[in-house]
Image (tube, rainbow, N blue to C red; front, side, top):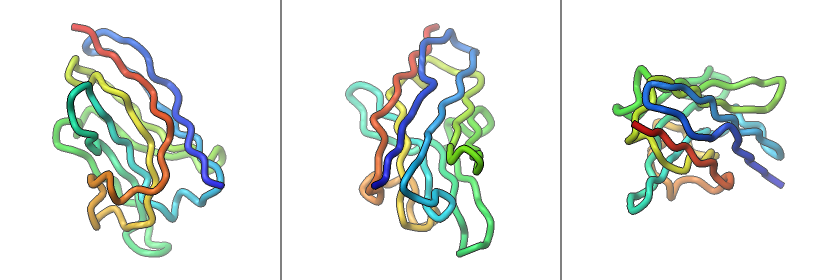
Amino acid sequence: QVHLVESGGGSVQAGGSLRLSCTTSGLTYSRFCMTWFRQAPGKEREGVAARGEVALGGGQRLYYFDSVRGRFTISADDANNTVYLQMDSLKPEDTAVYYCAASTIRCYEGWRRSDKYRYWGQGTQVTVSS
C-alpha cells in the first residue's frame, strides 16, 4: 500500500525559507514522477516542482514552474525514501497547502496535470506573511 506523508510546513515571513519533506512507502519513488503541488484558497491546485526519470534507468530530471524556478529546489534522499522541497525567498503568494503526489507517467508527459496522479499525501500548510 502506497503512503505519502508530508511534513515541514509552517509560518514564515517573506524572504524566509522552509523545507518540506515527503516520506514515501509502498513504492520505488525513483520510478515515479514525484511532484509537489500547491493549492491556495479559491484557486486550482498547481504543480510547482517535479522529479522523475526520462527513461528507465536514465537518471532523474527536475522540472519547475516558472514562478518558483530559482527559489525552490526539489531533491530526494534514497536512504530515507524521502522527497524534499527546499523553498527559499518565500513570498506571500506562495501561501498554500502543499501536497506531494506520485504518478506512473514520465514527468515530461504532463507533470503539472493533477489528474495524472494516483497517489497523494494529506498536505501541509505553508503561510508566508508580508
